[in-house]
Image (cartoon, rainbow, N blue to C red; front, side, top):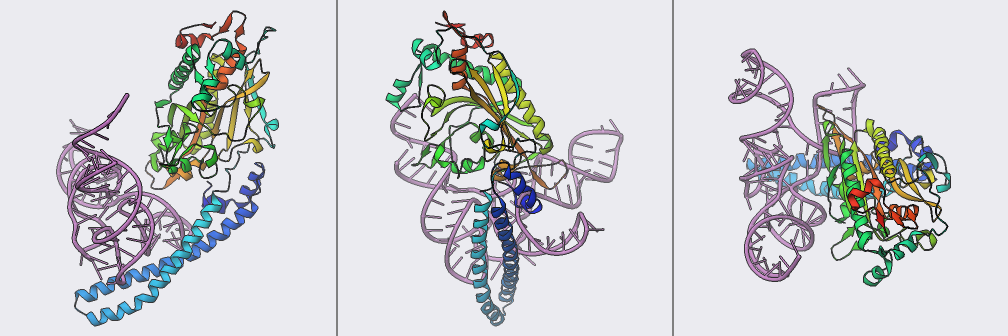
Length: 424
RNA sequence: GGAGAGGUGGGAGAGUGGCUUAAUCCACCGGUUUGCUAAACCGGCGUACGGGUAACUCUGUACCGGGGGUUCGAAUCCCCCCCUCUCCGCCA
């Protein structure tokens, strides 16, 4: 959520920059500014009436105390009209504020200056790539065949006990999950991210804080009996740890990592793109979250991207980093880098990580603020997060790229975690 | 699930209708004192949204878990909801 103050001071800039996200903000911005004018004038009236009432009440109190009952009663009679006026003004103010808030949450975050123009993923900009695409044996097959061949993951069993998109990992398939989770957590810790293990279920306030609610309600599993939501990513509980918090500048940077299962309804997708591990309702992911001083958030973003790069390099996967174009970016992000790894048997790039700077967009919803040392005034902090990494597509790429007639090779960096070097 | 207690500033904790501008203590910040530290003493101490100003100062309103009500006036009284704790039951 953009702040009112920012919109007021940067009206033209907001409209201009949001064009990059293919969002026409002109109408909403006008409406917001107009509503705010109304709000301010109403607020002024309300508050002065309230002040008058407070003074009157105090006077009545004093009169009663000194036994001047008649005068007190006289003063009392004056309060009735004022009281009604305040009630009326208050309800108008409440309506305006509600309307204003409804408009404010419709505005996406402004894309950073460096965000490329574009409408779809086609227009994303490849910024770096590395690793080598392996030349596979002619008998090479996609991962959904490999997991059957080696009995690593059972989709049918998942369908039986839950439904499509809830795989059951078995044997070395299950161990590979554990190995990857531990590998990612250890690496994150080495990079200075403190581990937390959050709840997998969050309340409505948390959903709002990171921007899943109200707009993406349909993408989360909702536990209606308790009005709680299954988390779509650890970003939600971890970032919300800092909801309604005022940090000191000296607390920066706050760096957390967390493993969690993630649950996504992903309604309405079928076909080849979602086959096998390409898209699931439940999957595992290690997330990194950072809270920084506004001056340092882009530096922090670069560091996080660099961290993710070391992961795909250690896994010896062919990778590339793309900077998302305006049209492909999320509602809340100011700048996003996606990591993709090449899946040799499917012959396509798979998105395995998304690293974003949200600047103060989430902080404003979260009321996550900080104070400079010795300053009274609070400012919004910047929040960032990234996957480091999401498992399923990494597993898909590992299986496909490392398949040999003898079995599937495990990359060296992972062997201490799996304690086997081949799946056969 | 049953029974009970409770929710007040960063923390502890007083406050049962108007000197509450929320006491007091602790923590924290500044000052005095001091060779340094500590102690002592003095002062300060939250958030949000407005008004005013060149700026600092100044000033208004709201906020005692949330919402509603009673009243000239509510942290305090009434209603609804949420949450926490304790004991019991069930249970990994």
